[in-house]
Length: 130
Image (cartoon, rainbow, N blue to C red; front, side, top):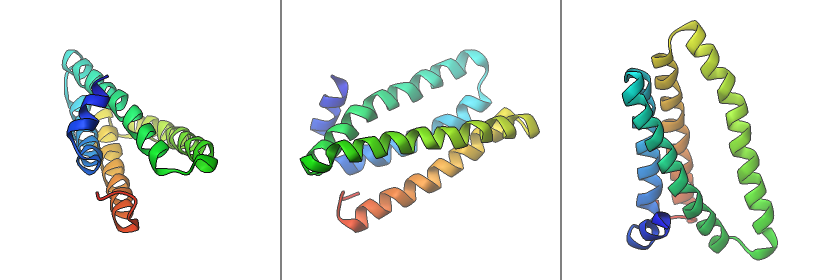
């Protein structure tokens, strides 16, 4: 419901950049905050994720030809799960070797760089006016 309202009021490029920015800001805060405040930011991260999914699914559905739609959605899902498979152990290793704060900062930097590269590629491919 809120995703639909957000999508109707805000351009997709602003939504995508905002999601990226909110995630890369929230992750280090989760690492630094005490457990009570960290819960608030975990909630915030999941809220952003919950808004992002219907918006991106709707965008993919409208931008993808029907004969390719299932493939694109499956590849998207596979990519997200693959990233979790890679970054989950990485965060664990960083936490064990350094600290939880360092792990959250590292993952935030990686997401920031990767997300920026992807959004710029979308912009220059013409897929999104990001």
